[in-house]
Length: 455
Ligand SMILES: [Zn+2]
Image 1 (tube, helix red, strand yellow):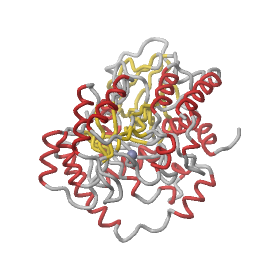
Image 2 (image 1 turned 45 degrees about the horizontal axis):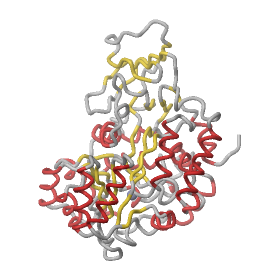
Image 3 (image 1 turned 180 degrees about the vertical axis):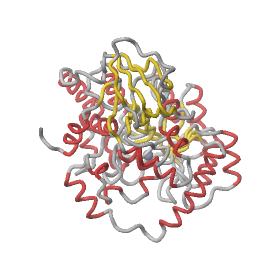
Image 4 (image 1 turned 180 degrees about the horizontal axis):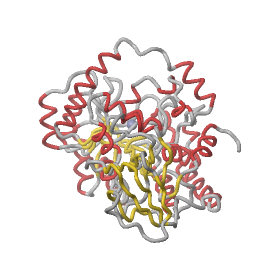
């Protein structure tokens, strides 16, 4: 199966060589000065209210307040007064490849579909996207190589990590159908197996690994401390980071104590306690909340921002089965999240954007990023902290040097917004243009492609 997938990737690469001309590899070669916009840098510093951003050959070459920036002669001047520019987003947690919008299965897992998901992410302003634990390793390595070689049309940069679980453990009910069929999760039952698997990943230059630790309220085999301690120790020996799936407070404490680098999921059934907060202060793990998947789908709301990229049939299906009013338990969950989120952050959890998109069309690639960011703010995170957690911090986590902030030398990947997200975080949706390597995407054409419309 893996061999077949790799072959398919090679075929796609060859076919798309001519079609891929443009933005991903070259970007814009002109020098462009964007003048007058509010610049949100992405590192948490105060915004520049009337700024200048100079882009040359797809890179940022100057940034600062108007009057402080020398614009090179011959530059194209673009007046963006009244607009806001912020860095493109980075999503550290999705499940790419299986979603088909009108179907969901391992059969959908083709390089074309991986590319489709990455193009949906970039359409919504996400410049890099990491698939966590569910991607076939060798096919993914081939895809990354081909994308870096410029063989695909413009898309979010693809990152992935393998997953590890006890035999017959791993992802939740839906995702596991795909990972089982493609045999993507490394199933390990002893410390020695675990170390050997991690060594194999390190040999392939893989930088992160995902582990499923908890037993989903008794329905899954639980990863033993012997195994996760071995994984974490071996991974750290090779400079790899460990992402740990744990939804219950006791499991979160256990994996943080064991040294997991990235905490996946949020305790949302009880208030977090002093012991967990002390562990957060001590270890300061990165933290992908992936809360949105548990929310009512925004596809129920008839919001053009969300609907623009769905095939009509997919919207009809979601609205037929997933748009009941929120259950009575939703208010309680909301209260706990509003209490817990600021506590996680205040105690040192390093919040990073992740959405879990790809498991179900009701919570899909791209718009789900904006959903997650807005719901953080609804639960007490400031808009500025939310933007940092969606830009520079996940870029650091993924080891991406040239994304995440508006700074000299970075790739010119940014959102041009018609309203200020520091006033209302939902303004991250007011996208006029998305620039990747200094070139604006043709978003209308892309949306038509996602809806399945022929030109
Ligand atoms: Zn996930």
